[in-house]
Amino acid sequence: MDLPADHLLAFYTALKLHYEHGRSTFGKKLLATEMGPSDAYALLAANVMYDLSRRENKSDHLFEALCLLQYVLRNSTSNFHVKLLSLKIYHLFGCQVGAQEMYDYLDIKQIQLDSMGYVHCQLLPLGGRFSGNRNVYDATLKFFTNSYKERLEYIALTYRFCTFSKMEEFMNFKERLTNSLQYVACSVEAQICDLVSCYGNITQNLSAYVAMSIEPAEDRIAWLELSDNRDLGAIIRWDPLH
Image: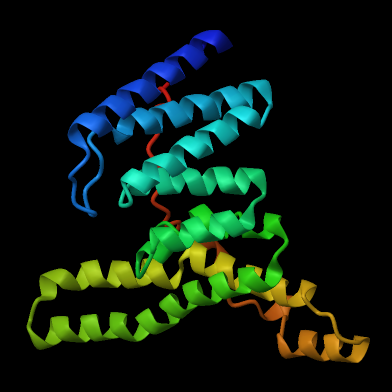
């Protein structure tokens, strides 16, 4: 927004008041799985403060946005848009513990590890907590390993039940997961975590390095065929189209 800072702050205050009015009037007896009817006001308010923080290169507005988002989560525990923005802000602060808690709160599973895991996994190296990072990468890699057999079973079922119209769809899905950019990125980052976490003597560290079997000349990754399966529309935005 090309508005003066004081106008943006006034807009932020108005959005907060709209959120509070909607929550107190219509959002008191919602189910745990329902989003609050006025959550979008708070989400837009947090984005206003995020933009203002970037414009002024200050963190106080960003902290204000995070506090508002945490307040919204207390009242609307299933709003994943709020969780995603909170996760992003935690990473901007370099607070990896908070980011990890928010990632766990999102409860990303199965195919979402491929399509949405990037919101957390790509920023983990910046935090410097390599042992904790390895656990996240291992959980993601486990999905790809376990799903390989399931993908083959789905293809076999298309033959068994003569649903050949689904064959191309399953094959394309299998190809995208096999050549997933997220899978390769997590594999590489996991090895880097092992390298930088070496804290034994030189002999032990060299043995650990040899065990990794890192041979660039024998690299089997099809770099030109990698599939970017990220869901870039997962995080709601109000940026103009042009």
